[in-house]
Image 1: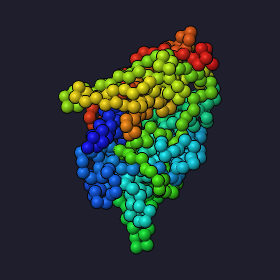
Image 2: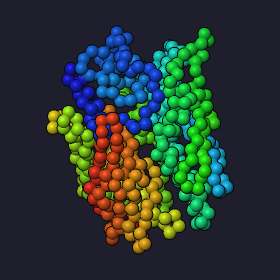
Image 3: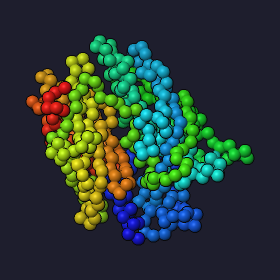
Image 4: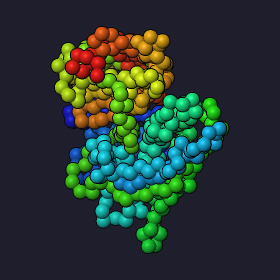
Length: 447
């Protein structure tokens, strides 16, 4: 009984810290309210007790009373972007090809590019009878939608990075497209999941055990829009998609709470510009404030990994800034790590969160003052992945800066203003307030 209560609280901690689930949900169809019959399982995780039970179907949204097993999906997708505007050259002249699965750089079972959160895969049953393929393709659509924005920005820098006015205009136009894609994720999901049938058509088999080709359904999707700026029309289409299976089929499987568990993972991690400079946090802290649960506000406070906390490599909070006379100024990266476990909860319950991190998803342009000493990121311009783990159960949501981030150059590095990062879900409004801080250049000097 105690183990069940512990796991329920752990899942509640992820919901409390991360506002539950991503604002962008995927199509469902099966009923996760139907738990697996205890007689159909051989473990203590299914049926009975006060805690979560194994879901009979795949999970798209987090639920404290259900769990399933994580599967890493394998395959590839090719995305085409076509643009009408007053300049030559489509933002993506060749199809953007994204591979996923074992062996792909940056893809792992622990942090899969594409995943399905489903009951155990039955190798003895036809694949067409099981939901794993469908939910891989649903998550592929979601991950593809999220990964398009940083890929478009990367293309803008590579293709139109020159100093001319024409290049600057083209780069700005492509970045406007990326902004639109980032801010209209629900429209992207609707185009490729809801309208294609991927999110609603359940698995089925013909007499020869052939099933529905969900990858082909995804290829029927297309999304058109008219973003602000020079561009008059954009059309995004999936020109090719392939699914090659799930992993692992044998061995120990990790539990998962939903397909949103990999929301902080992108197909392509954008490396900071080579001319940028990284500095480490001298000392800092963050405070979480959530909505009211049972009449009490969710709150939490924690110290950030910094020089003052004796952080180890990989667990130190860092700030990476670019100031370039041609490219302008940008926040290339911002990573905030917890210095240790933190307590999160209300007056009625308190839960220990073992790990916590905030990561900037993509290079973000900044406004540079005339002296070149101060950069400002306006509200809503930066996009973050906020992740946490408690008792081995991870969770990730997307969030944006609700206040401006002001970074000022100092003799030792940079000084940053207070920053509020916000997220909204069905429970209400959640904010993480990062205190003003000092950042020191590596080795004590710039560059």
